[in-house]
Length: 217
Image (tube, helix red, strand yellow):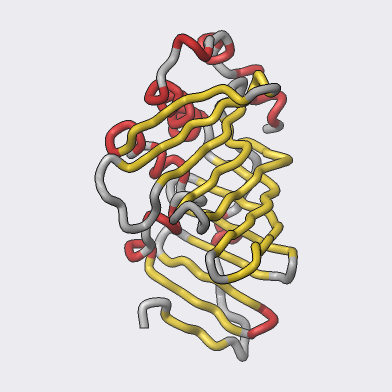
């Protein structure tokens, strides 16, 4: 399904919302509802930038595909090929240039790693565990910012900031802050909803000659 078609089937209630009439928690609720109730497959081109205290910004570009309930795939093309696959049980990160694959059981993946890929699961915790603040974006009437700060000390990150298209309640950009100067953001474009995504897309078999590394060892 194309994004334009997706807009047409959204309830009029979503389309008619006035920003001043809703709270941060309510906005999170609409954002969550789209991913939990209306989307089985979400795919988009992504530009992922990592800022660190110890190195220059690193930019990676590729395509992200999510499939309910817990599968995801990221095929990075730039600056070099890298593949991230999750079949719901294991996560694989494969770097062809190094002939190396890193693997980890899903149950051991931390929140900081899961936010960018497990939208529906993470969004379901926001109203319960986070303080959510909604603001408009000057000069962009269709976009809003939702800032989500953990109510208790979170060792994985300090806050998450979502920029969301209010006509669809789909993400435009997500930023995860580990500190004021260390953060990662992902920008989304060419979004497609509920298209075809066969399960084999999320599987990975290490090619012959690949060194397999367990992330926890």
